[in-house]
Amino acid sequence: MSINAAVLLAGVLLLLGIASSKFSARLGMPVLVLFLLVGMLAGSEGLGRIPFENYSLANSVGSVALALILFDGGLRTSLTSVQRVWRPALSLSTIGVLLTSLITGLAAAWALKMPLLQGLLLGSIVGSTDAAAVFSVLRTSGLKLPERLTATLEVESGSNDPMAIFLTLGLIGVISGSADSPQALLLLFLAQFGAGSLVGLGVGRLATWGVNRINLDYPGLYPLVALSFGLVAFGLAAVLGGSGFLAVYIAGIVLGSSSIVFRRGIFSFHDAMAWLGQILLFVMLGLLSFPSRLLAVAGEGLLIALVLIVVARPLAVAVAALPFRFRRRELVFLSWVGLKGAVPITLATFPLMAGIPQSNTIFNAVFFVVLISAITQGWSLPLVARWLHIGRPADPTPALSVEINALRQVDGEIVDYTVKPKAQVAGQQLRDLALPDGVLVTLILRGRQVLMPRGSTTLEPGDHVFVALRSRLQPWIDRLFDPDPDEASLPAGLVLAFNAATSVEQLHRFFGVAIPAEIRPDTAARSLADLLADSAAGSEVQVGSFGLRAGADQDLVTACCLVEAPLR
Image (cartoon, rainbow, N blue to C red; front, side, top):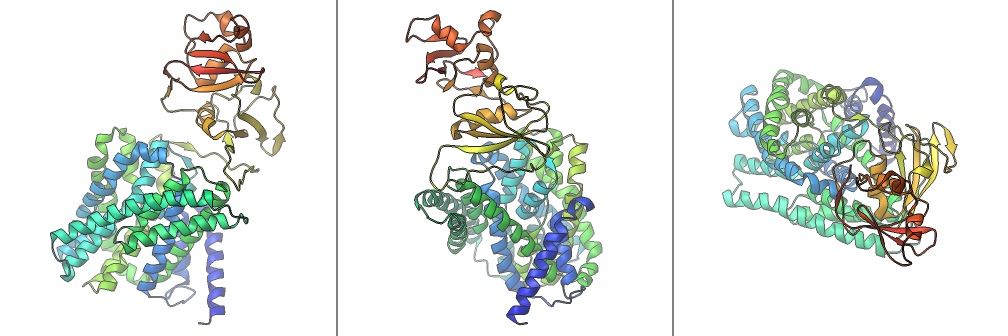
């Protein structure tokens, strides 16, 4: 095939992949399954009759595509979320993967009538939760899940590849006789996790420093700088014997959780690259499949998938996540969203390249299991969430976008909030919100109508509110728009400036702090300026948990939290 014909074919397949995503919601099918079907239809036994059976090339291209997906996933996973869920996520990505692999491997050896080691090898290949599948399904499901649950699933899927790779390579070494000793396997395990983690942290910090210090004159180069560091993280970890997938995911987390220039542009670019990676990955894997071979293992594959989905994953979650105080329905949901996708199919090419006996049967069975998992678990995700009363419908995408693409480090950004019916701001006039100095509502989108904000403007459920703010103030504004904010405390020593006309009641309402009983109603209704006017010049007035002082500007009053106070 000439290069021109190859470019034409790549363009057609890419367009077909993008077009298929439009039908995903209507068909109730995960978009990655449609990408696979596009590849299968174009493949050797499909309508396109395109011959493709290069497992080595598929492994290499698939690894790079998965690195792009993981880097974007890392960018969108906050370090705060990781700090909250790293313990259950680590338990699921190690103990959970090991138990899932063991139970599924025993079932595979029995169903396919193959030696135990080959069965365990198959179990190891499908034992991990797939990052590409989880990121794709969670972000296209139309659901907004609890933050802790979403973070656990994403961090688990982004960090469990080293365990799957370790088990796969270790068993290949045992079967082929190339594994030297238990010490060599232990070294492989430590290298996968250790080198991957350290390289990811180091390159992530270096990427943050480099993006902020390079001072490029051409904005379009900033996303490429970030991409370059992501590829360095992946390649360096792999060269050192670690997990490139873990390294690129951690590097993305570190970079995305930092304050960087041209942030929106970098995120938009990598969102597009992740979509390109998904389409390329799943269409290519579809090309690699042969439906006739899949049908030959359909019965056994269905049994293996049933054991994996209904027995192995739930038992592994029960053991690995039970100590971390998840509610029962959250454990059920974690059990169901053990999606399989590109990683198992990519790992299934390892036995083929190593010449392991029955490797073709393993590959075809893995492919069939991935199809069953993606279709059943991915398709039913919204139904299971509703049945378990977990999450809510995702916010609609606004018809308008407002961005700051800063080419230098600036302390500020524009954030888009959707007003929920139960949010603190719902039904409130802007003048009653008592927003601190450094926060300004710049625009309100109601349906397709653009509203210019005024003090008398009332925020209604469904409004998209664009807020310009200092970066350090965003957590407090997030709480105002969150219908179910997490439990937290107001830290002692926090200092913010408010408009002098703000009342004592509005000050407490902004922070979500109960007004102490000793504050009389008439005092709660007074403005901060009035209270200061009654005191000696330059002195501090204490009101409940706050100390008030005159601000640098005569229209401002500085409020300092004197003691730690629980937030409502």
